[in-house]
Structures are given as C-alpha cells and as structure tokens.
Length: 254
Image (cartoon, rainbow, N blue to C red; front, side, top):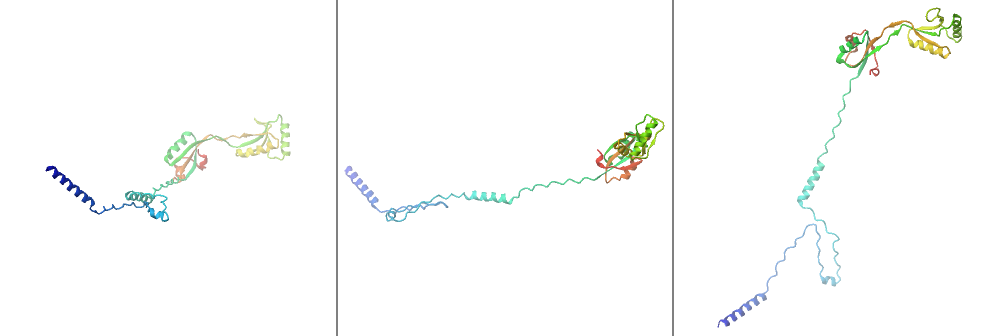
C-alpha cells in the first residue's frame, strides 16, 4: 500500500515539473549597454545582409584615446594657467657706481730738509688723497759752453777764427785759470739753452763742453700732493707753511 502511494506521488511531481517547464515565461530584460565617451564601438553586420550584397561596414582605423579623468584635466589646466600667469622674477639692474670726485694736484715747497716736507704732509692730513716727497738737486747759477783747452794762445786764436768762419759769434778766449786757452762760446741762465748751443757747434765739427758757473742753491725738497676739488689749494698752501705753490699734472704723481 505504501509503495503504491509513493509511485502516485512521484508521478504527480513529475507532471508538475513538466507543466512548469512548458509554461511560457517573459524573456529577461537585457542589461543596458554602457558606452565610454570617445571610444568607437564595433557593430556586427547581420549575415543575411552580407549574403544579400549589402556593403560591409569598414572597421575603425584606430581607437580614439581615452580622455583623462576630469580631476587630472582640471589639475593640468591649473598648472598651465599658473605657469602663464606667474611672471618670471625680474633681474635686478646693476647699481651704477657713484662718480669719483675730481682730483687736483699741487706742489708745495721748497723745504730745506726732508723732515720739513714730512711735517707739511702731516699738517695737511686727511685732505690729501695721496702725496710724495721729491728732492730737487742743486742748480748752477749759469752755464758756459767751452771748447777744449788749446796748447797755446796761438792755437786758441786759430780755433776762434775757424769758429767765426763757420758762422758763429759771441766768443772770447779765456786767458787764465783752469780753463786757460779755451774758447768760451756763450753763457746761459738755464742748461737747455747751453745744450742747444753745444749741439749746433758739434754739428759744425767743433768739440765743445758745458761747464757750470757757480751754484745758485743747494738741494731742496718739495711735497707733491693730490687733493679733492672740495679742498681749496690756497688753504692747503697756507697750512703747509711752504713758500711757493706750483701747479702739478696728476699723471706725474705716482
């Protein structure tokens, strides 16, 4: 009896399952197709369209690049904007050097000793840009141009005649002393004039020499200074205690 019940129950279950499968059901909804922006899609052509001679759709030559996320695009735009908007730091212009004050140069003297010249430099002190001491050697009172001494008076007279014939004048024969029987050809207050006379006689073939005629003064010292134009030269002269002031080219002041 139990076996017969089980057989009937299994038959009923099988019938119910068969009916469930045979009952029509709605097709499941297709999931919406998600397309990415900027990416080309590939569409399939139905086979019947190909068989009927429809033109085939060419495949895309290249796939467009996927754009960067919006956050990266915004960051790139901000960087470019800041690079354009921010000006480059300006290069500082070199500061022009202040023009130096013009200098004036003078010589103060003569001083009888080096110590006196040094004391004058100390008295002028900070008003001087630079200074130097200069010693001046003794000068002769005058200069004479002489020929060499002749052996006798007659030879000296013959020498004088040849000099006159050559076109020179202003001569006399020295009768005595260390230069006896020499022909004197002029006396000059400065050495430059005596040297010009000696050069002219030498060019004519007469050997001559220059002789100092006494000493005018001994050695002396001068103070050569450079000072700013704001310091008056007359005031510096007074403070130095020097007897004289002479203009000096600054190029001569080492």
